[in-house]
Structures are given as structure tokens and as C-alpha cells.
Image 1 (cartoon, rainbow, N blue to C red):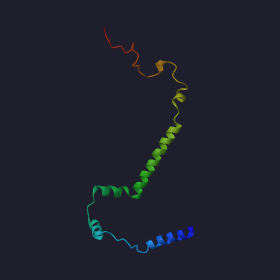
Image 2 (image 1 turned 135 degrees about the vertical axis):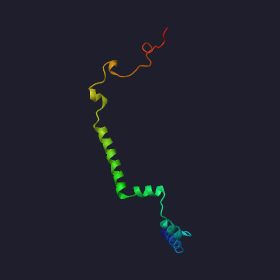
Image 3 (image 1 turned 180 degrees about the horizontal axis):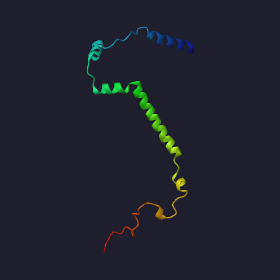
Image 4 (image 1 turned 120 degrees about the vertical axis):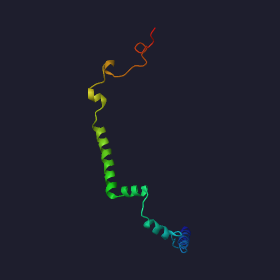
Length: 112
């Protein structure tokens, strides 16, 4: 029973393709194409896209991006951590270049 139902569905699907016809272009398509081809001046976007679409330019840009990415990855892997550069963390507060804004004794600007 299932095999007969499946065959009917297949036949129905194949029969639906019998009345399919080829779709043509829209009205005045060829006229628009001929006009566009005959036009001498190009817009700025057409000029830019034509330049970028050249294989040499596209290949160069892709190679540049890949080399920059690999350079960044290699730099991150080879850069030592902060604690590895000095051997240890700073021992006292004089080694740290920060200003303590919360320290009231050193930042008291009131002149009485």
C-alpha cells in the first residue's frame, strides 16, 4: 500500500512538470542591455568595482589581509607575559607608575 502511494506521488510530481514552459526576459531587456553597453561614461561605483574585480588587485588584497593576520598571530604567540619579562611582580609601590586618587593624605588640595 505504501509503495503504491509513493508511486502516485512520484507520478503526480513528474506530471506537474509537463506544462512548464521556458521563461523569457522581461520586456525591453535587450534594448536596455544594448543601451548600457553603448554608454561611454561610467559611474564612480562602476569604475571602483571594475578596478577591485581585477584578479591581480583581488589577489593582492587577500594576500595582504592573510599576511597581516598571520603577523598578528605570530606576534601574540612570541610576546612574553608581563611577569616573565621582569622575572616577578613589583615588590613595592614605588615600582608601579600609578597615581592613587583615593589616598587622602597625598591628594589633599585644601589649603587652610
